[in-house]
Image (cartoon, rainbow, N blue to C red; front, top):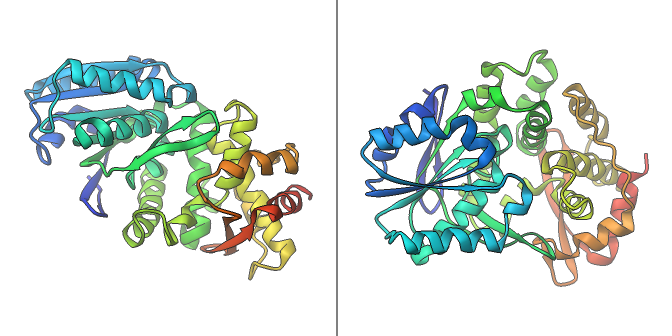
Length: 355
């Protein structure tokens, strides 16, 4: 049973194992002793894995309540947050109880934010059921909901007590959702693990658990390293945002019809191309990034207008007054931060979109 330790303001483990959901209650008891557990999921995920998680929690002796949300990015909202908070108050949850997020990034971010704000903070457990959530949002303590102005604009840093990733959940993922996770794994490789990038280029069958385990472990190690160095996203942790400034603009413009992973793929290729054209990269990363994404069936081409994307990016969290921080790939396995004027963002996007 692979176990990774994430060292932040709160040290916690990530368990990676087939069948881990069947041990969820037992695993929680190893780190927390809540009397009550509120299991938060979406209706699609719950129909697949909810009974397994619920049975495990009840077998461990917990008094369990369940909140089922609608699937999709629209659930990551203030109204959904309020629904959870009111439910916890109505059912008299205390700081000795906990929340469990069973689902992808939307459920994980929403549940984590609820845990961070209810009673000024109660414990919560992440149990990601998508490859994207396993390698990205379930680790690191960023929690948030979206506002009309943009993505993740209301949130808090609140670390989970434990992350439980049952790899068997990946077997149920539709192909497009699986590819979202691959895009984030590519991101981790580009900014911090050239060996992982080489591995990705050699694999012929990614829909096997050995591949999933290898990629999750490697990606989480990259993320954990940056989180340990900069938990509150003020310095090197920003490197994890490679491709995300443009990606969040793409998501917003498309009204979230383009998924996060697909948008990140578009953003990474565009930023690599722009960096090469500007002479900022030590080696042009455009070709290898495009090759690895297409190898896994991910089309990184973006037909949005640069000016429109730049306007959408003005509310990005990485903006500081009249500057915005972008991530530049120096070469595969190494990246750097660069502060540019907001007025230059349209030019960078245009260079990135023009082949």
